[in-house]
Amino acid sequence: MSTLISLKNIRKIYTVGLEKVHALDGVDLTINHNEYISVMGPSGSGKSTLMNMIGCLDTPTSGQYEFEGELVHKMDDNQLASIRNRKIGFVFQTFNLLPKLTALHNVELPLIYANVIRKERLKKAREALEKVGLQDRMHHRPNELSGGQRQRVAIARALVTNPAIILADEPTGNLDSKSGDEIMQVLDSLFELGNTIILVTHEEYIAKHAHRTINLFDGKISKDTRTK
Amino acid sequence: MIRLLLENFQIAVTAIVGGKIRALLTALGIVIGILSVTLMGTLISGLDQSFEKSMSFLGRDVFFLSRFEWFGGQEWWEVRNRPKFKLDYVDKLKEQGKRIETVAPVMERGLDVSRGEESVVGVRIFGTTPEYQRTTVVNIKHGRFITEGEVRSGSRHAVIGWDIADGLFGNENPIGKDIKLGNHRFTVIGVVEKQGKFLGLFSLDNQVVIPIGTYQRLFARRGWMRMNVKVDADHVNEAEDEVRGIMRRLRGLHPQEKDNFAINRQEAFRKQYNMIKYAIGGTGIFITVLSLLVGGIGIMNIMFVSVKERTREIGVRKAIGATRNMILGQFLLEAVLICVLGGAIGMGLAWGASFFIDKFIPSTMPVWLAIISVSLSVVVGVIAGLIPSYKAANMNPIEALRYE
Image (cartoon, rainbow over all chains, first blue to last red; front, top):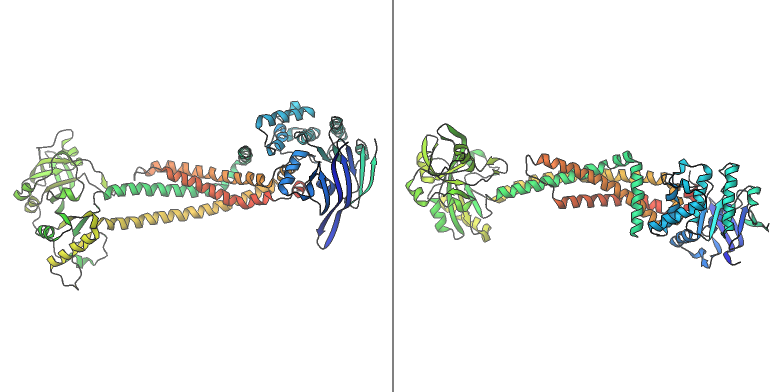
């Protein structure tokens, strides 16, 4: 298996008032292609910061971050936007769909920023929605969809650019257990299809879907276990 | 890049349509601003057109010598006691002035003109010479103008204006027919083509021209005389000095005495007109700038609100790969679009109003004005949208996504 992501001695320090908070305090982590990883830890342990770091939404205070050979820690805003667009698919706890757009147009959105022509965009968006089983809900707006369906639209949006990694931040956190199970099934099947998935969660039983679990504590990796 | 612009255009349209009333209210300042600038422009261009048309009757190279200044601030009694003009000035001016091309004496009064039962009241009767034709615009439609011979013999021949021909003769040919000026019988020898109104004040078609000798004999031996002096068009200002010199000599004025006559020029009208024009223009520009300023601030405000409301959207867009410039463009376009929408409404209203104004002053909205209005709207949109859009563009995606 080839290396997808390599983090070396990553530190992220926030200054809150006069106090310096070490959100990440020397994290070393290597993620290979087609891994299924869950990230766990109590709140304040640096989970979110790590996800933002891996998702190229944030840059480290120090350390090296390589993403498929690209040096993320040296990137400027535009380069970060570009790598997010090309390589990363986000799935959020609160779905974060645009309320005025239909499912299809929500899914189409990343391709607009990738400068793909309209016809091609719509074709890919349809395919992505089919993958998550929403082909008959394409023209519904988010408020006409159930929570589970919304999250599936969000997953389709994350998939549509064919990213190198899917980052799911508490994807079942706002769902009932049945819808949550459905979403996990979708993620499982995406892993089976060869995608790399990182999952942030509080729930032990959700984390069990992953094949590797990383535990964070006080900005450091406290445990890195391969379960399957 | 163009594709992105198109996408942003769609996003902006969706956002504006989604908040119709808000957008409309916000654009009100722009509507008023553009309305006032286009209305003012239309008005001025209409005024300009009719002014220039009227001015063509007062040639740039023609002086109007008279006892009165057209727009004078002189003491009334001083002007009233000025000596009258005499007919022999004509030859003296012609002989002594090198830059004088011709001189036409003019006497004028109001009179009723009739033919049988038909009559036209309040007609201006002009007594003058054939030279008159060279000092103003008199295009003969039928027949001919008065001749030197008729002036000398004092014959009862008259050239009538279009409205009089129309009023007294209808479709008949008036040439050779008789009319009465007051109680005196005259024969029509010519009809002047339709000329319209002078500055919208009085009709140039309600006039009768007769030989000056006849005029003096029948209507006013004393009356006031003025003179139209046509001069070398290339040396108008030198000619004015020359005419002033000759007149002062004719009047026997000492160097320290003031002129007791007036040399009126088209310029006098132009000055007055420009004052009116600047007043209208200044007021219009003031209202425009003020309402565009208020409108612009309104747009800026609504854009701040829009950016705040859509913080999460901005976060999402950034997370999935929108760059700073793309977000900037999205909101900037929205601001510009609201402004252009407002501008279009304002222009539409002004266009409608121009039909109403047209009833009083001939006016149509010039194309350049429409272009200026649209550009102005765009500029206001860009300026008003810049800071909010910049704020949106520079949002931290992590914080934006977390925003409730």
